[in-house]
Length: 408
Image 1: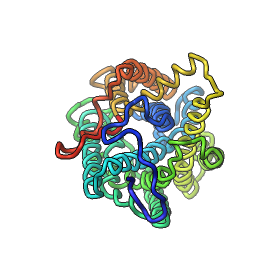
Image 2: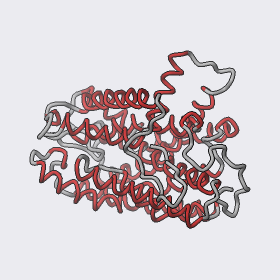
Image 3: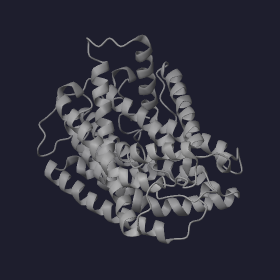
Image 4: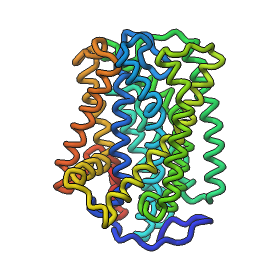
Protein backbone atom coordinates (compact mmCIF):
# COMPACT_ATOMS: atom_id res chain seq x y z
CA UNK A 1 0.00 0.00 0.00
CA UNK A 2 1.09 3.64 -0.26
CA UNK A 3 0.59 6.78 1.77
CA UNK A 4 -2.91 7.85 0.80
CA UNK A 5 -4.09 11.43 0.48
CA UNK A 6 -7.39 12.83 -0.72
CA UNK A 7 -6.53 13.46 -4.37
CA UNK A 8 -4.07 10.69 -5.16
CA UNK A 9 -5.16 7.25 -6.43
CA UNK A 10 -3.57 4.14 -5.00
CA UNK A 11 -0.19 3.21 -6.49
CA UNK A 12 1.04 -0.24 -7.39
CA UNK A 13 3.36 -1.69 -4.79
CA UNK A 14 7.07 -1.17 -5.27
CA UNK A 15 9.26 -4.11 -6.06
CA UNK A 16 11.86 -3.27 -3.46
CA UNK A 17 10.01 -4.87 -0.57
CA UNK A 18 10.32 -3.86 3.02
CA UNK A 19 14.07 -3.29 3.02
CA UNK A 20 16.21 -0.64 1.44
CA UNK A 21 15.95 -0.06 -2.29
CA UNK A 22 18.94 -1.77 -3.94
CA UNK A 23 21.29 0.75 -5.50
CA UNK A 24 20.91 -0.88 -8.89
CA UNK A 25 17.11 -0.41 -8.79
CA UNK A 26 16.95 3.18 -7.61
CA UNK A 27 15.31 5.74 -9.91
CA UNK A 28 18.27 7.51 -11.59
CA UNK A 29 16.86 11.05 -11.84
CA UNK A 30 16.84 11.97 -8.11
CA UNK A 31 20.38 10.66 -7.65
CA UNK A 32 21.62 12.52 -10.73
CA UNK A 33 19.97 15.68 -9.43
CA UNK A 34 21.63 15.30 -6.03
CA UNK A 35 25.02 14.71 -7.64
CA UNK A 36 24.78 17.89 -9.71
CA UNK A 37 23.28 19.77 -6.76
CA UNK A 38 26.43 19.05 -4.76
CA UNK A 39 28.50 20.84 -7.40
CA UNK A 40 26.26 23.89 -7.08
CA UNK A 41 26.53 23.75 -3.29
CA UNK A 42 30.33 23.47 -3.44
CA UNK A 43 30.82 26.57 -5.59
CA UNK A 44 28.16 28.47 -3.63
CA UNK A 45 29.90 27.74 -0.31
CA UNK A 46 33.60 28.03 -1.12
CA UNK A 47 33.72 31.83 -1.33
CA UNK A 48 32.10 32.03 2.12
CA UNK A 49 35.44 30.90 3.58
CA UNK A 50 37.26 33.95 2.17
CA UNK A 51 37.91 37.19 4.05
CA UNK A 52 39.68 40.51 3.84
CA UNK A 53 37.47 42.11 1.18
CA UNK A 54 34.32 44.26 1.14
CA UNK A 55 31.45 42.03 0.01
CA UNK A 56 27.99 42.40 -1.50
CA UNK A 57 24.68 40.79 -0.62
CA UNK A 58 25.80 37.28 -1.58
CA UNK A 59 29.21 37.51 0.06
CA UNK A 60 31.36 37.97 -3.06
CA UNK A 61 34.24 40.45 -3.05
CA UNK A 62 33.35 43.82 -4.52
CA UNK A 63 37.01 44.61 -5.24
CA UNK A 64 37.93 41.40 -7.05
CA UNK A 65 39.69 41.25 -10.39
CA UNK A 66 37.86 40.78 -13.71
CA UNK A 67 37.93 36.97 -13.50
CA UNK A 68 36.71 37.04 -9.89
CA UNK A 69 33.82 39.31 -10.82
CA UNK A 70 32.95 37.17 -13.84
CA UNK A 71 32.84 34.01 -11.73
CA UNK A 72 30.84 35.80 -9.03
CA UNK A 73 28.35 37.05 -11.63
CA UNK A 74 27.82 33.60 -13.13
CA UNK A 75 27.31 32.06 -9.70
CA UNK A 76 24.93 34.75 -8.46
CA UNK A 77 22.88 34.38 -11.63
CA UNK A 78 22.85 30.59 -11.89
CA UNK A 79 23.89 29.04 -8.57
CA UNK A 80 23.36 31.13 -5.45
CA UNK A 81 19.86 30.75 -4.06
CA UNK A 82 19.15 28.07 -6.68
CA UNK A 83 20.92 25.06 -5.16
CA UNK A 84 19.18 25.46 -1.79
CA UNK A 85 15.61 25.15 -3.16
CA UNK A 86 16.70 22.31 -5.44
CA UNK A 87 17.97 20.47 -2.36
CA UNK A 88 14.71 21.27 -0.52
CA UNK A 89 12.54 19.94 -3.34
CA UNK A 90 14.57 16.74 -3.52
CA UNK A 91 14.33 16.37 0.25
CA UNK A 92 10.53 16.61 0.14
CA UNK A 93 10.47 14.23 -2.80
CA UNK A 94 12.67 11.74 -0.97
CA UNK A 95 10.56 11.82 2.20
CA UNK A 96 7.45 10.89 0.24
CA UNK A 97 9.18 8.03 -1.53
CA UNK A 98 10.57 6.78 1.77
CA UNK A 99 7.08 6.98 3.30
CA UNK A 100 5.65 5.05 0.36
CA UNK A 101 8.19 2.26 0.78
CA UNK A 102 7.42 2.07 4.48
CA UNK A 103 3.68 1.89 3.83
CA UNK A 104 4.11 -0.69 1.08
CA UNK A 105 5.92 -2.82 3.67
CA UNK A 106 2.68 -2.87 5.67
CA UNK A 107 3.38 -0.23 8.30
CA UNK A 108 0.74 2.07 9.69
CA UNK A 109 0.90 5.84 9.35
CA UNK A 110 2.02 6.33 12.99
CA UNK A 111 4.92 3.93 12.34
CA UNK A 112 5.78 5.67 9.07
CA UNK A 113 5.64 9.07 10.73
CA UNK A 114 7.96 7.82 13.47
CA UNK A 115 10.55 6.75 10.89
CA UNK A 116 10.31 10.06 9.02
CA UNK A 117 10.66 12.06 12.21
CA UNK A 118 13.61 9.93 13.30
CA UNK A 119 15.30 10.65 9.99
CA UNK A 120 14.63 14.37 10.40
CA UNK A 121 15.99 14.33 13.94
CA UNK A 122 19.21 12.75 12.70
CA UNK A 123 19.48 15.41 10.00
CA UNK A 124 19.08 18.07 12.67
CA UNK A 125 21.78 16.34 14.74
CA UNK A 126 24.10 16.15 11.72
CA UNK A 127 23.46 19.84 11.09
CA UNK A 128 24.36 20.74 14.68
CA UNK A 129 27.62 18.79 14.48
CA UNK A 130 28.37 20.25 11.05
CA UNK A 131 27.98 23.79 12.41
CA UNK A 132 29.85 22.94 15.61
CA UNK A 133 32.90 21.57 13.85
CA UNK A 134 33.01 22.91 10.31
CA UNK A 135 30.63 25.39 8.66
CA UNK A 136 28.43 28.23 9.90
CA UNK A 137 26.24 28.05 6.76
CA UNK A 138 24.97 24.50 7.40
CA UNK A 139 21.70 23.65 5.68
CA UNK A 140 21.06 20.18 7.12
CA UNK A 141 19.51 21.57 10.29
CA UNK A 142 16.90 23.46 8.28
CA UNK A 143 15.85 20.30 6.44
CA UNK A 144 15.67 18.32 9.66
CA UNK A 145 13.56 21.03 11.28
CA UNK A 146 11.19 21.28 8.33
CA UNK A 147 10.88 17.49 8.16
CA UNK A 148 9.88 17.41 11.82
CA UNK A 149 7.33 20.21 11.57
CA UNK A 150 5.77 19.56 8.16
CA UNK A 151 5.81 15.75 7.96
CA UNK A 152 2.01 15.73 8.18
CA UNK A 153 1.74 17.41 4.77
CA UNK A 154 2.67 14.11 3.20
CA UNK A 155 -0.94 13.07 3.89
CA UNK A 156 -2.63 16.41 3.16
CA UNK A 157 -4.52 17.10 -0.07
CA UNK A 158 -3.01 18.94 -3.01
CA UNK A 159 -5.02 22.09 -2.33
CA UNK A 160 -3.75 22.36 1.25
CA UNK A 161 -0.24 21.60 0.05
CA UNK A 162 -0.23 24.33 -2.59
CA UNK A 163 -1.84 26.86 -0.27
CA UNK A 164 0.86 26.21 2.32
CA UNK A 165 3.53 26.59 -0.37
CA UNK A 166 2.05 29.95 -1.40
CA UNK A 167 1.97 31.12 2.22
CA UNK A 168 5.56 29.96 2.65
CA UNK A 169 6.51 31.95 -0.44
CA UNK A 170 5.06 35.15 1.03
CA UNK A 171 6.86 34.55 4.33
CA UNK A 172 10.05 33.81 2.44
CA UNK A 173 9.94 37.18 0.66
CA UNK A 174 9.30 39.02 3.93
CA UNK A 175 12.20 37.34 5.74
CA UNK A 176 14.62 37.82 2.85
CA UNK A 177 13.67 41.50 2.54
CA UNK A 178 14.33 41.97 6.25
CA UNK A 179 17.68 40.22 5.90
CA UNK A 180 18.51 42.50 2.98
CA UNK A 181 17.80 45.59 5.10
CA UNK A 182 20.06 44.22 7.84
CA UNK A 183 22.77 43.48 5.29
CA UNK A 184 22.97 47.08 4.06
CA UNK A 185 22.55 48.68 7.49
CA UNK A 186 24.59 46.50 9.86
CA UNK A 187 28.32 46.81 10.32
CA UNK A 188 30.12 44.03 8.53
CA UNK A 189 32.61 41.81 10.33
CA UNK A 190 34.47 38.61 9.63
CA UNK A 191 32.50 35.43 9.22
CA UNK A 192 33.31 32.51 11.53
CA UNK A 193 35.29 30.98 8.68
CA UNK A 194 37.74 33.90 8.85
CA UNK A 195 38.41 33.73 12.62
CA UNK A 196 41.91 32.66 13.56
CA UNK A 197 40.86 31.39 17.00
CA UNK A 198 39.23 27.94 16.57
CA UNK A 199 37.25 28.26 19.82
CA UNK A 200 35.90 31.71 18.93
CA UNK A 201 35.01 30.41 15.48
CA UNK A 202 33.17 27.45 17.01
CA UNK A 203 31.09 29.71 19.26
CA UNK A 204 30.30 32.08 16.38
CA UNK A 205 29.27 29.19 14.14
CA UNK A 206 26.84 27.84 16.71
CA UNK A 207 25.34 31.25 17.44
CA UNK A 208 24.85 31.94 13.75
CA UNK A 209 23.47 28.48 13.02
CA UNK A 210 21.03 28.63 15.93
CA UNK A 211 19.60 31.91 14.65
CA UNK A 212 19.62 31.21 10.91
CA UNK A 213 18.29 27.65 10.90
CA UNK A 214 14.78 28.41 12.21
CA UNK A 215 14.50 31.75 10.40
CA UNK A 216 16.10 32.32 7.05
CA UNK A 217 17.11 28.79 6.07
CA UNK A 218 13.98 27.03 7.34
CA UNK A 219 11.69 29.64 5.79
CA UNK A 220 13.62 29.46 2.52
CA UNK A 221 13.14 25.73 2.07
CA UNK A 222 9.42 25.50 2.87
CA UNK A 223 7.93 26.31 -0.58
CA UNK A 224 10.33 24.05 -2.51
CA UNK A 225 9.97 21.29 0.10
CA UNK A 226 6.17 21.27 -0.28
CA UNK A 227 6.39 21.36 -4.07
CA UNK A 228 8.77 18.41 -3.86
CA UNK A 229 6.04 16.50 -2.00
CA UNK A 230 3.58 17.42 -4.77
CA UNK A 231 6.02 16.17 -7.43
CA UNK A 232 6.70 12.92 -5.56
CA UNK A 233 2.99 12.08 -5.45
CA UNK A 234 3.08 12.02 -9.25
CA UNK A 235 6.50 10.34 -9.38
CA UNK A 236 7.78 12.95 -11.79
CA UNK A 237 11.40 11.91 -11.30
CA UNK A 238 10.75 8.19 -10.92
CA UNK A 239 9.18 8.04 -14.37
CA UNK A 240 10.32 11.20 -16.16
CA UNK A 241 9.49 9.81 -19.59
CA UNK A 242 5.79 9.79 -18.74
CA UNK A 243 5.98 13.42 -17.59
CA UNK A 244 8.31 14.87 -20.20
CA UNK A 245 6.03 17.77 -21.29
CA UNK A 246 5.52 18.97 -17.72
CA UNK A 247 9.21 18.62 -16.85
CA UNK A 248 10.15 20.53 -20.02
CA UNK A 249 7.85 23.40 -19.12
CA UNK A 250 9.21 23.56 -15.57
CA UNK A 251 12.79 23.49 -16.86
CA UNK A 252 12.32 26.26 -19.43
CA UNK A 253 10.03 28.56 -17.48
CA UNK A 254 11.83 28.04 -14.17
CA UNK A 255 15.23 28.78 -15.69
CA UNK A 256 13.89 31.91 -17.43
CA UNK A 257 12.32 33.22 -14.22
CA UNK A 258 15.51 32.56 -12.25
CA UNK A 259 17.77 34.30 -14.78
CA UNK A 260 15.52 37.33 -15.22
CA UNK A 261 14.93 37.65 -11.48
CA UNK A 262 18.60 37.19 -10.65
CA UNK A 263 20.00 39.70 -13.15
CA UNK A 264 19.52 42.90 -11.07
CA UNK A 265 21.39 41.50 -8.05
CA UNK A 266 24.08 40.09 -10.34
CA UNK A 267 24.77 43.59 -11.63
CA UNK A 268 24.76 45.01 -8.09
CA UNK A 269 27.03 42.39 -6.51
CA UNK A 270 29.57 42.56 -9.32
CA UNK A 271 29.79 46.37 -8.87
CA UNK A 272 28.40 47.04 -12.35
CA UNK A 273 25.41 48.90 -10.88
CA UNK A 274 25.11 50.88 -7.66
CA UNK A 275 21.43 51.68 -7.07
CA UNK A 276 20.02 53.10 -3.83
CA UNK A 277 18.91 50.86 -0.99
CA UNK A 278 15.29 51.24 -2.07
CA UNK A 279 16.21 49.26 -5.20
CA UNK A 280 19.01 47.00 -4.01
CA UNK A 281 17.02 45.36 -1.19
CA UNK A 282 14.05 44.45 -3.45
CA UNK A 283 16.59 43.15 -5.99
CA UNK A 284 18.01 40.90 -3.28
CA UNK A 285 14.53 39.61 -2.39
CA UNK A 286 13.68 39.11 -6.08
CA UNK A 287 16.86 37.11 -6.59
CA UNK A 288 15.98 34.84 -3.68
CA UNK A 289 12.34 34.18 -4.51
CA UNK A 290 13.00 33.52 -8.20
CA UNK A 291 15.73 31.13 -7.13
CA UNK A 292 12.98 28.72 -6.08
CA UNK A 293 11.91 28.52 -9.72
CA UNK A 294 15.54 27.95 -10.67
CA UNK A 295 15.94 25.10 -8.21
CA UNK A 296 12.82 23.39 -9.51
CA UNK A 297 14.07 23.91 -13.06
CA UNK A 298 17.37 22.20 -12.28
CA UNK A 299 15.57 19.23 -10.76
CA UNK A 300 13.36 18.99 -13.86
CA UNK A 301 16.42 19.15 -16.12
CA UNK A 302 17.94 16.21 -14.29
CA UNK A 303 14.73 14.26 -14.82
CA UNK A 304 14.84 15.00 -18.54
CA UNK A 305 18.53 14.04 -18.70
CA UNK A 306 17.89 10.77 -16.92
CA UNK A 307 15.04 9.98 -19.29
CA UNK A 308 17.21 10.67 -22.30
CA UNK A 309 20.14 8.62 -21.04
CA UNK A 310 17.99 5.62 -20.17
CA UNK A 311 15.97 5.40 -23.36
CA UNK A 312 16.61 2.10 -25.17
CA UNK A 313 17.49 4.02 -28.34
CA UNK A 314 19.86 6.49 -26.62
CA UNK A 315 22.87 4.19 -26.16
CA UNK A 316 25.23 6.69 -24.49
CA UNK A 317 28.94 6.37 -25.10
CA UNK A 318 30.97 4.40 -22.54
CA UNK A 319 32.46 7.66 -21.22
CA UNK A 320 29.03 9.26 -20.83
CA UNK A 321 27.71 6.13 -19.14
CA UNK A 322 30.59 6.12 -16.64
CA UNK A 323 30.17 9.83 -15.93
CA UNK A 324 26.44 9.40 -15.37
CA UNK A 325 27.02 6.45 -13.06
CA UNK A 326 29.58 8.44 -11.08
CA UNK A 327 27.18 11.39 -10.70
CA UNK A 328 24.42 9.06 -9.56
CA UNK A 329 26.78 7.49 -7.03
CA UNK A 330 27.58 10.94 -5.68
CA UNK A 331 23.84 11.51 -5.35
CA UNK A 332 23.47 8.25 -3.44
CA UNK A 333 26.19 9.46 -1.07
CA UNK A 334 24.85 13.03 -1.01
CA UNK A 335 25.01 13.62 2.74
CA UNK A 336 28.49 12.14 3.04
CA UNK A 337 29.80 14.15 0.08
CA UNK A 338 28.24 17.34 1.45
CA UNK A 339 30.05 16.90 4.75
CA UNK A 340 33.32 16.00 3.02
CA UNK A 341 33.16 19.30 1.12
CA UNK A 342 33.18 21.20 4.41
CA UNK A 343 36.06 19.10 5.74
CA UNK A 344 38.10 19.96 2.66
CA UNK A 345 37.20 23.67 2.75
CA UNK A 346 38.18 24.02 6.41
CA UNK A 347 41.47 22.24 5.74
CA UNK A 348 42.20 24.50 2.76
CA UNK A 349 40.80 27.90 3.72
CA UNK A 350 40.60 28.23 7.54
CA UNK A 351 43.25 30.50 9.16
CA UNK A 352 44.11 27.75 11.65
CA UNK A 353 44.54 25.17 8.85
CA UNK A 354 45.57 25.80 5.23
CA UNK A 355 45.04 29.55 5.49
CA UNK A 356 44.14 30.21 1.85
CA UNK A 357 41.02 32.15 2.82
CA UNK A 358 42.94 35.44 2.86
CA UNK A 359 45.17 34.73 -0.15
CA UNK A 360 42.81 33.75 -2.97
CA UNK A 361 39.84 35.34 -4.70
CA UNK A 362 36.41 34.15 -5.72
CA UNK A 363 37.56 32.55 -8.98
CA UNK A 364 40.27 30.48 -7.28
CA UNK A 365 37.87 29.47 -4.50
CA UNK A 366 35.35 28.22 -7.06
CA UNK A 367 38.08 26.30 -8.87
CA UNK A 368 39.01 24.61 -5.60
CA UNK A 369 35.32 23.86 -5.03
CA UNK A 370 35.01 22.13 -8.41
CA UNK A 371 38.09 20.01 -7.72
CA UNK A 372 36.74 19.11 -4.28
CA UNK A 373 33.42 18.07 -5.79
CA UNK A 374 35.17 15.96 -8.44
CA UNK A 375 37.12 14.20 -5.69
CA UNK A 376 33.89 13.32 -3.86
CA UNK A 377 32.34 12.07 -7.11
CA UNK A 378 35.33 9.81 -7.70
CA UNK A 379 35.24 8.53 -4.13
CA UNK A 380 31.51 7.81 -4.30
CA UNK A 381 31.91 6.04 -7.65
CA UNK A 382 34.68 3.81 -6.35
CA UNK A 383 32.88 2.83 -3.15
CA UNK A 384 29.46 2.38 -4.75
CA UNK A 385 30.83 -0.40 -6.97
CA UNK A 386 30.76 -2.58 -3.89
CA UNK A 387 27.14 -1.60 -3.21
CA UNK A 388 28.11 0.43 -0.16
CA UNK A 389 26.25 3.48 1.08
CA UNK A 390 27.79 6.54 2.65
CA UNK A 391 28.53 6.54 6.38
CA UNK A 392 27.08 10.04 6.71
CA UNK A 393 23.37 9.19 6.46
CA UNK A 394 20.36 9.00 8.69
CA UNK A 395 20.22 6.15 11.16
CA UNK A 396 17.91 3.17 10.47
CA UNK A 397 14.53 2.92 12.18
CA UNK A 398 14.28 1.37 15.63
CA UNK A 399 14.87 -2.40 15.82
CA UNK A 400 11.21 -3.20 16.45
CA UNK A 401 10.44 -2.01 12.90
CA UNK A 402 11.70 -3.74 9.75
CA UNK A 403 14.88 -1.91 8.65
CA UNK A 404 14.57 0.60 5.84
CA UNK A 405 17.70 2.60 5.01
CA UNK A 406 17.15 5.95 3.27
CA UNK A 407 19.54 7.28 0.64
CA UNK A 408 22.82 8.79 1.73
